[in-house]
Image (cartoon, rainbow, N blue to C red; front, side, top):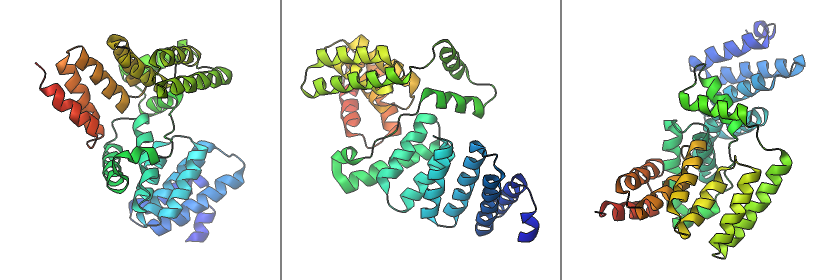
Amino acid sequence: MPQKRRSQSWTELKQAGNECFRAGQYGEAVNVYSQSIQLLEKSGQKNKEDLGILYSNRAASYLKDGNCNECIKDCTKSLELVPFGFKALLRRASAYEALERYRQAYVDYKTVLQIDCKIPAAHDGVNRMTKALTDIDGPSWREKLPPIPTVPMSVKESLAQAASSTPSPQQNSVIDNKKKAPGPGPEAVKKAKALKEEGNAFVKKGEHKKAMEKYTQSISQDPTEVTTYTNRALCYLSLKMYKEAINDCDTALRMDSANIKAFYRRAQANKELKNKKMCIEDLNSVLKIEPGNMAAQKLLQEAQKMK
């Protein structure tokens, strides 16, 4: 049997691996995917996307077989080849969770939600990890998290296009906007990051007006960084500029439709503007993504008492 397979092309081996996986023969699937990977790597046509899929498929087989460490290795390899592949991220998150490495699992689940906020497995994962980490680390569990990578707009778009040859109107508008406005260059991104950090330093000192000015300069250099908008929204809230805060949160949510800070800060602004219904809607959105969010629960109770 293996002899016959060795004479096959990597695509045929991949197909055979898929069939083994579907039949529940996970150990055999690992063997066949390994042969396919070897053939493709030797062939010299190092197609990153194809290799990325093969590593992700083999990772799925390892996961089913309970070999979480190998699954994590393969997912990491797949993500090096194809950054932000959401299947590899989800598989790695499941493996981390099984090994009780909840912080890493949380980061992967959250990254998946940046790519597509409609993936139930990622929402459920975030909820489970939030509960587990709150139990372990208490209310300040977020402070111990590794950094969550920001998924670039270009990745979200290419995935949106790949997922559907007929993108939704929302995806279309994002794609069209991208065509009109090319992303910032590396120099601008660097400058934007430095300005944002200056803004963060002012926030820590409670100097929100100065921070807001730095964030505005940062956005002029790189308008694609979501956190700069949510940070500036925080400053606008402190400066009682509620409509401006809402605008920034709207922008952040267009980029990342599961952004908890944007929903929460928009809810705070709407509460100040006495927009009870909108405030409650935003808080419900926060609690749908993160049911254990105490600040949102508290604000929701206050909002429900509003006249």
